[in-house]
Length: 533
Image (cartoon, rainbow, N blue to C red; front, side, top):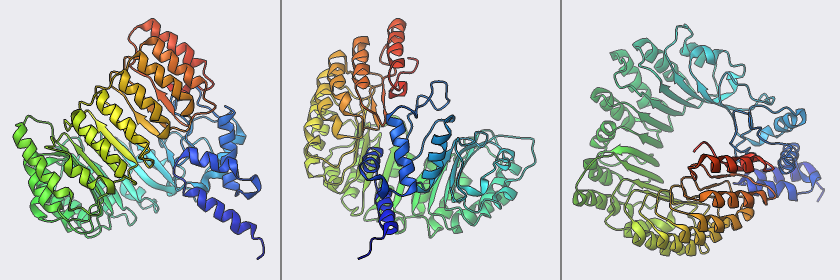
């Protein structure tokens, strides 16, 4: 068979594009012979080599600081890149990324774009600002943080020149007038490319006339939308209008709602969720709406489910009764892959344990699991072969729960992210977890009670965590010697993909300055984040 170098190179790049983490991508491009790499992969290799040689860093005076440079799977770089060869390498690597992020319409990217490169624009506050963007035809996603303005540039006209925009997020920074709302609605409703809409109306007294309501209802009910997120539609007429339209839409797959009125109206209309809904995220749910939600979702094809109760004082027995309705529904969700339950008392974790082996993500927050519940989950982890993310926030978990989790990590090789923030884990639990942390890509131990002894244990494992995307120790009483020990451990790292978060661990100003001085001596100060505490 003749050697087809082009085919081999294409295969090498296709394999690379399937890699999930920066550590894996770095290892891949550095291990492959240079001749086997496509030009984009060769450029990415030069960028990783520049990171390792500390030729590509985030200057302290750059607005991007203290964030770390990310080369995969998303591209995140400083706003200023003075070296031309780094700019050229970034441009050469662009075909590897489906899109790049531009933070603001007024802040250009620090490298040249290719004609086909798609852009996600994070911040645009006026239509006039959008009109000044040179590459707006390359936009695939747009975040509009709209304010009142005296300019007369119409979003309707601008959107006609945005053929590639598929995702639009609209946030009202001020009370909008009817004219402003109508312009934004018409721009979105007449677009032929939008598939994802995030609509946040922070001031509920916004001016919605009858024409706006009709346009809104028509768009939500008939546009070929795949994902919708709504927040701020608390007025009863708008809640009912939105609910009716959402239930009528036949293409919607992902729905996120933040208002109890809209949620109640949706589940008053839908006794069972449509079969095309695969992701459902409900925030601020009223307790009394849990039973109809559980009934409607039972046996649905939902893959991603998130339910977050609205804050309020309710009787424990009533809360557990409603929590039981949700738990009883879980075993019927054969397609479920991701589950988040927040601010909901759970009578037991048995129903969660039943679906745990099929999950890739489990997030539990403020469920009063305490050590017993966490230990039960830890015991069940050995049956999990798909779980990649486990978040157990604010559960009242102490060292006993942390030790149980640590012992389970070795039997859960798929796990990549562990979040046990806001618990009561002390130095003993932190020290035991420290030995297992290098197995992970990201760990959040913030706002616990880890002290000096725990910090010492963590400092000894830090040099083995260069591949990790983040270690969060914020809000722990580490003491100055503990912080300095961790910084010394970081200094022994040959390279680091992510940062160690050490903010709010000290109160004494002289101790804070001592740590800042030592962090400033690191090969890359962004390896540690130590903001004003």
